[in-house]
Length: 350
Image (cartoon, rainbow, N blue to C red; front, top):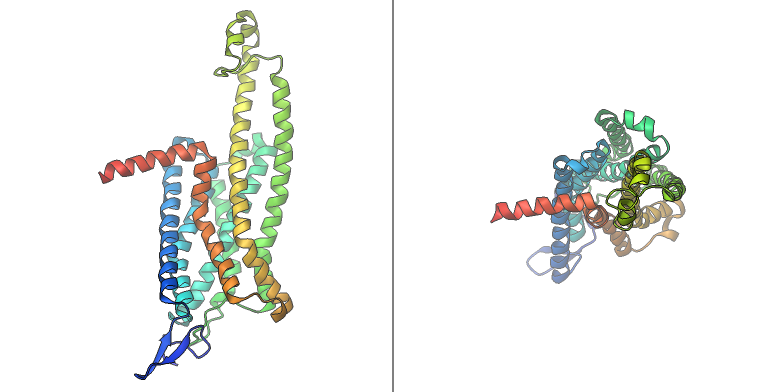
């Protein structure tokens, strides 16, 4: 077979038009144009949205906390998916075979596994960081330095690289089919390491965080009864002003309580955002990992159709564009930072 020419087993069809052997694409023209448009928009939105996340963390004072470096690294992984993975996945889907040679096939598969594993690894590390923030707040705040967070990020990327190594050594010279490794041992091991085990950790951790924050919120609300309201509490400001002697006596207690309330509110809000991020990731990638591992266990009897498997594959890729939307909807600090950045972009453009 010539380099770059499809094999007889590719997904398209050969077509003899009288002028020689031709190649018919797997999809009709209107479907091809639609797919190119949709994936192009997905790529642009993924890059633009995640670049906004990175700039927002580095330029907004409200987002300067060291733990937000996790979000920067996660956004970087999503950008790399859009730039290094999506164009070649689209080309393979539309052409019906792999055009770019065996070397790039190995690198492409390794990068795909690396970035997907790194994404869920970041979410797992973030969930553990949230848990430690709730259960060991005093000690963790002393140790939560940028260096410590960067060390955890480095560990996530290193673990993802270990999972991604086998595809580098599975190059098939002059092969035109660039598919994930189908050896049962690797499929099951990579699915467990990349998805199922981290998901189990995250679900367990977030359930414990939810129980702890619920109990603590109830305790804070109970402590508020009989104490002075926080400054700025619109519902009780009148009673605060009407009792100056009580205000003086309980001022120190009120300030301490208000600080605890503010901390709890911010921690709970951030935890909710990350829980939604985690949920979106699981919903997007679970169909792919489930069917991929199921086929490895029971073979052809459990194999789904190729269009359905491709759909699951692309739904997973869509996750890379969702995180900026989630931050915008659920986090006030990110909303403010995005508005500021977009306004500056509009002013610069005009």
